[in-house]
Amino acid sequence: MSVLLQCQRVSHAVGTKTLFRDINLSINAGDKIGLVGHNGSGKSTLFSLLNHTAEADSGDFTRGRDLRMETVEQFIADDLLDFSLSEALAEKLPAEERDTGRYRVDQLLASLGFSEAEHQHRVGDLSGGQQNRLMFARAIMNEPTLILFDEPTNHLDLKTLLIFERTLKSMSSAFLIISHDRAFLDAVTSKTVFLRDERLYQFDLPFSAAKQALEDHDAAAEAAREVEEKNIKRVEASAKRLAIWGKTYDNEKLARKAKSMEKRVEKMKEDRTFVSRGSGLHLSIDVGTASANRMLAIEGRDIVAPDNKTRLFHIEDMMIRPGERVALLGHNGVGKTTLINRIMNCYRTNPDGDEIKFNPQCEIGYYDQELNLLDPAQGMMQTLRDHCGGSDSHLKTALIKAGFPFRELDKKVAVLSGGEKARLMFLLIKLNTPNFLILDEPTNHIDIQGKEELEEQILSTNATVLITSHDRRFVDNIAQRYLLISDGRLQEINSPEAFYAAEPTSGVQPGQTGKLEAAADSEPDDILSRIVELEQLLEDDLARKPKFQKPKLQAKWKEEIEALNKRL
Image 1 (tube, rainbow, N blue to C red):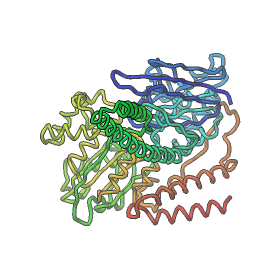
Image 2: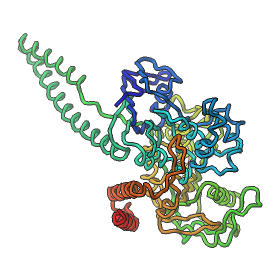
Image 3: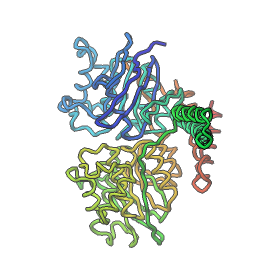
Image 4: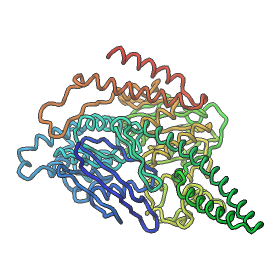
């Protein structure tokens, strides 16, 4: 198998912080690699080194002769904003093909969920998810041998996410993906590289299996380190004892032996098994409680678009009770965020009104996906002062416990990364101890460790939660109830599986010139993929503490697995 891109003994630092030291990585033809690490570990920096937009402090990069590399960044390039969608994709074609190859442009845009009318929309007017789809289309247009993706699933709805999955599975190109979406990584990758502790840990496994292998590695390292520390203490004690005897009895032989043992201790310390330090970042929430039969109720209301003219959907009856964890599902554009904005507007301006009825004890902690609550011009300390109150020493301690270094406590919000802003938002929620969490796409900016910490925090409290999220694993792990916006109304469904299954999964291979492959042609692959996903969900849930497990969902997953096996 040919090597497309290789880095050897690469080290790099930003300011005084070393991101990685003497790392090695090879990307071969056909590799499907997930690059995982906590926020700030250096993933995006390594990405920049691999695509040659930055230079490493030291180390070598080798590019194979078959390398044709494309990059999908997190944000659309400014010089494309005034293009039409169609023009921005056609611009990737060789000059001699831009007239004859327009059918390829139209076909690829259609396969990625764009309507014909949208082909002429200005790129700058597209949503974040639509721009992500465009960047994806531009990357695969000319069938590269390697694609580098930096958080391609942010802001995507499930419809587009599943199209991405199907397309990536059908491609022969190698790719490396930075992502915090666990279900997505499990679906499309076969190798996982963890960046932490200034080094790389590599496994020929998809994310969930690789994470378990990494945890096994950590457990073995800790056990080995414990034995080594005991041996070091034993030899140190012997050396000290011999040194005392040599001095007491003026015995040169014992003194020499003590010196020898001391050198042996130094060598043993140098050779100790490395144990991970962890990320040093922590995400946590504290919640209060409320007693009543409801936290929120809406009856017989139309939800309209921000223009106050377009009716999005109707709510006949919606009630959320204390302690319930509710997921709000629906495609992008159906009105999920509009409903949440309506709830928050009523809560802030008319909590005692009839439009939306709140529990009198209701204290909402709100996380908005755009993080608009944070003022870019303010520092972190001032942000906490304005929204939380309390002494400066208390606020500084809270920031440090959340993983922010002491020297950066007055850092402006404007220069924080997306992950740092998310952690600051959750810290605001924690300090205000609400009893009702409304979380609109809370997983967009946090890393996998942060998602798992957030899940654990929510599950270990009696928090009332209303969430929207395109992260299927997060929804499956958190929610007890599911509200779906579809066909102009809000309705309760028993599980999200029907919503996931209703999503189109057709994709197109780069350069494909015929009709899209019929879903039936790859039905066995789809069924097997779904069985693997369900088995993983079941395994993850059974691994939880009994009080956090979901027996009803387990039963549904088992039934679906049995039905799918029969179809095979």
